[in-house]
Length: 244
Image (cartoon, rainbow, N blue to C red; front, side, top):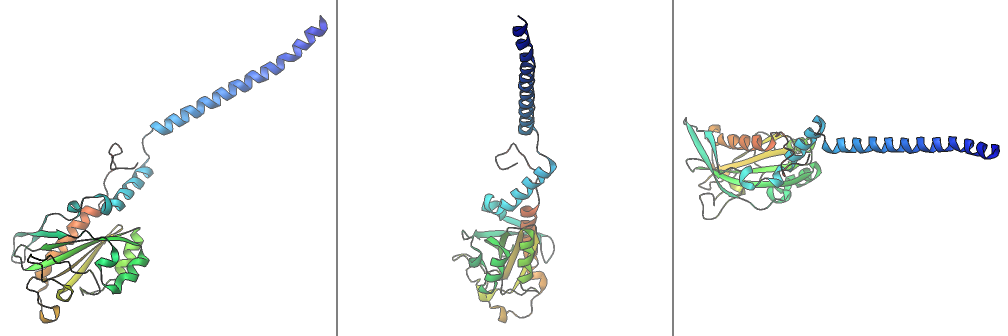
């Protein structure tokens, strides 16, 4: 009997160790499940919200409807005082960077990481000035800054954004030779470019000395479009628009 008793006594430590190991595994598994559940159900961190916001902003040129990027009308301060509205004439379906700018800029935009350029044309309230506006999207803010440095200074229109005319409208005589000036604005991963001229089709070389205020509203349009496009929005993780 003693031998049998001794063997049973030696079995107890083994059973205790096995039980402890089992209990440990259960505890570890429980902790893992709770940790996973907490990770799945917790709200996004501030860093995650910021990444989601920046990601949404960078995709707007692709995800927003064209009419949201280029409003149907844009208010501006008229040269003679008061307020006027520039009206959108049309939006181009073409988005390739090399189709929207002069050949002299192709290389610089490619190296800067240009992803696409959207263009639309506006006419001023008096229907005497035509403006083509382009939204150039880049992969990073640095890319947009690099591209901006390659654009002409002093309001020169070329090499720059190509004019976009619509046959059968008051803009149909606005071509590349009729561009009389240009401008650029930058914020985030976007550049907004504009080129402008007169609806009568006069070449820039024949336009003579222009009053800068005649074309000032082009800057108002560019500023409005860029402000809408490049202002971060607070993420709404419950919306299908967001990737949180």
